[in-house]
Length: 312
Length: 312
Image (tube, rainbow over all chains, first blue to last red; front, side, top):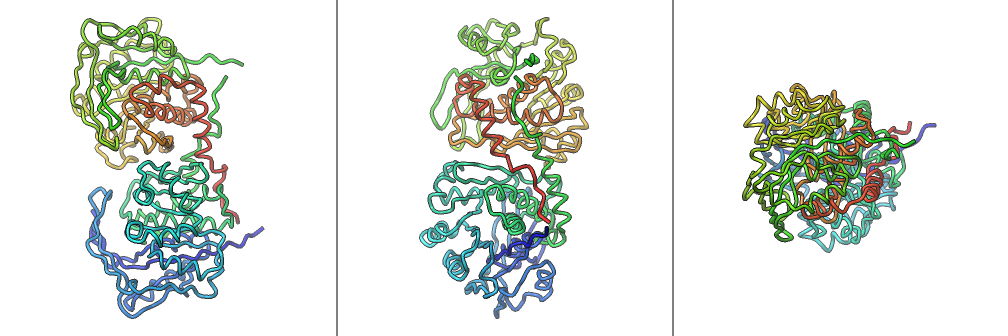
């Protein structure tokens, strides 16, 4: 029996990045959280992208997204320049500094969800201003699952508005430092308990090369990062993780706890493609077949034969 | 059918530690790699401990080990003082400095394996001088599995002797920094390939709170660290991990690749007890029942329902 996948609505930033990497410098690299998330999700399910770009955004990028099954009806084109970020990574890629951020057209962004996209089953709210996340939530019909990211800037700068968002989020996907900042707890089990109290009954804490943890109703689930021989650029890996996650949930139409556990492997596998190339280049090339191969290898990597019982 | 477990022979250091922890200062704490490994392994199988202590080593420690099923026939008592280490941890326990190390009776230690222990099926060589590791290997009958640790000091100071040890080791258990130093490769997949060339066909790389990786014949297996709300003291966690590992392998009598995968859960669970107390205090109290409860929780933590296949 063929199954019609659910749709994913992704709202967030589309950007150009200038990247100074140990492997070289790269200018005008297509980036932005919503771009990474959409490309990853599109490996598995239909995606609707809502964001804003400037007059400098090449038509070829839009057609590339279209060719990946990303509906760009909601990608607004404003006069002015596209959001730009300039960053430099340390030689081991473990840290980075922002050299310049130009919000440009993103400064006045007010997400407008096309009527045809308001009934998307899975909503992924990128780490935009919580006031805008609330505006999106007001425009959509209640999705099966609302997934949100946020960041240090909003945690410290807009705690009240962020609190209103969190009360409406089913699954919050953030990194370990954000979880610590949001909860005021260093220990991640304690941080998770505190964050659950703010609204999200599900929480994923991303730990980069150390994998990710899912917390729900006192249970913890763990997925490792897929081990790679060559990592070129971690930019967008967390957004790609979120994209793989929502792609799997939309494809299966199953948003149960067990399904989210399985989705984390797809999330982590998608992120592993992301970091293998500069910007979105490797992710753009990845096929569902590539993803299937990696998922199979991933399953083998955590297979211990099913029983940990001792002999008598 | 009842099954007679294999025996574990542990050779390494027995020590007293002075620990300056965020939670307080602790003096004359029972420690040493072989102590941690033996206590962990003894939760699962009979253990024979070979090491040396001084005249200051209380009889009560020896009887405590005996009560845990650790045969101390090979624990030599020399005139002089027991090996002492004094360390201070950072407030988040992520780093530590050695304030003082007094080898004392350990400086002249020459391991003598009692005749009754020479046919032990599983041999765990602690991170003693590689010349001593070789002396142990000469005294024993070929075990089913030789597992070894080493450390930065021998990697840089005794590369030739260490090379001879590695050629005789089945499974090397070291941490990520040691793997990088030993191989000259930062990337752990590349490091593993290089280390396999030196002898050990199996390699476990421990990453503390980030879990551990097993490498064998191109395959990678991953086990997370058991998440804890309260971590008091990481001293000995790696040695406890190795002890849990060999305990499981001895208990099952199965040293296949699949068994080593399962053993890593026991290793990680044992290490989780270790860090919950100062020194060996929590490990001393842990029962096989406690371990079983933790293993069951651990299995649930990595259970994704068995299939990562997509619907058609």
